[in-house]
Length: 304
Image (cartoon, rainbow, N blue to C red):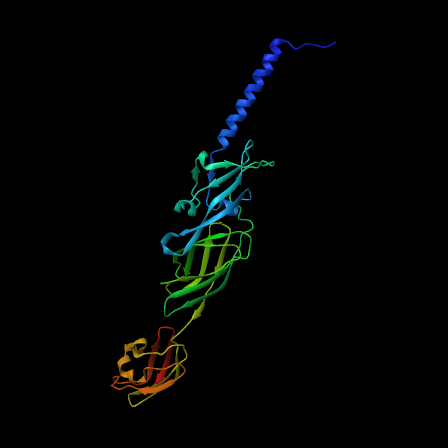
């Protein structure tokens, strides 16, 4: 015997189904407005960049690229969306959320609904392949290598000094997977103890100490003093010719450079001997001699 469904029960079921339909429609509509953050296509496991476009970067630091077609998995009803844009936004470079209108998305069918996660930096890493500092030019040369499977954005260089001071220089360069690039940082004050490069991934950074490059190294081969005459022998152990304007010669803390101008120019690998061309004024006993160049300095005590 078949039991009939009451009209009231049928109406209740219909109302419930209509409510569920409207509820799901509301949820789906809400999920079509998505927050896109910088490099979601590179660092979010639920996003994939399908097309890149090169654009000018901030501060004329080089050329960066931005993703123009990004596919992200989101939502319950239409779980896959295609984000398309040709506009390069500076704020996106610094992980500033940008709300993208629903009209910018195209639905892509998928069978595995997932949810958006924050940018994934777990697999990100890079190394400083080499770093050298030219004291004469006050320039830092760095070569960095991305050896992992995630693109990185190099943000800033931090320079630490022994007097607890920190100097920060912007880098603002994209380091792609498998890419090796050179960074040239000018006007870097010497006297630093270490350096750090930080990226858009908070836990991905590198500490390093650059190798010093000295182009005008002076070596004191000998110094003798007799009868108010101070004879010194200098050699150029650098890679550039040393001119008289490059050198300071101090005798007992008094600048006597002009008295030894005949020693220069001093060519690479060569040595010259010379004595003071003018009186140094009553040298006797212990005499302090300090010679400085752009790359180093030498201090000795001579008995007169």
